[in-house]
Length: 302
Ligand SMILES: [Zn+2]
Image (cartoon, rainbow, N blue to C red; front, side):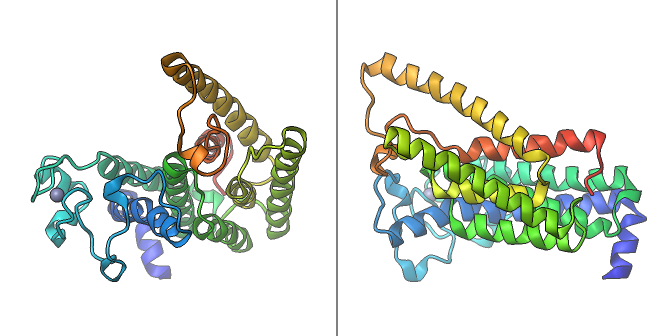
């Protein structure tokens, strides 16, 4: 492992290329997570309201094989190669010719780009970390999990514990092994502070308006961001996410009421929230990733 790491760090182009390939593979895996995890969780809770018909869970015994979401045709391994399959099939299912969601290719390319950016960030400042390959890999995985959270929350208003809690644990572990800039104690403290701040905001909102404005998932996600990014990052992420969420929420509320005069039932109402409730997770994720990219311009990744 040590010699592989030394070989990679002495050959940046090879390292970047390998991380790009790994990113495509992880992006492909992220697609599976984004498409299947919420469906599985919601069928466990018996709440499939708001799911598109094609996404209703199939035979659970057969759920490990990839299928076309439209015709349910089982996919061959040739159809599952990141990006290349999508291009070869021209974005259509080989069986029913239905257009394949662009989500697949966009997410694969986004994760690939993130892996390469993290690697580049370490290459550009080689003296700032003791473990260059592990640091690049840890931050790459951080972004991948965040992108999964973003897409699942945007679509289903759901931030699964199975993503946010491991992300929190990974953040603490990364600080304990010096893959993030702050010490383990600082990482624990900022995770705790993040949890407390959002929990307090959610509680106050609930007490004053008697409505649920924020989910438990948002609180866990913010704590995970605290563990990874430290106390300094939290005010900026929260401020940015609140501003972006408020603006987008107001615009979409205005559009919906302008179209129909009233608010139509949405995924939010299915969950017992206000019809104008929006998912906060995507804004937290975007601001956290943007912060990490910006801060790197002035401060090392580690
Ligand atoms: Zn099909």
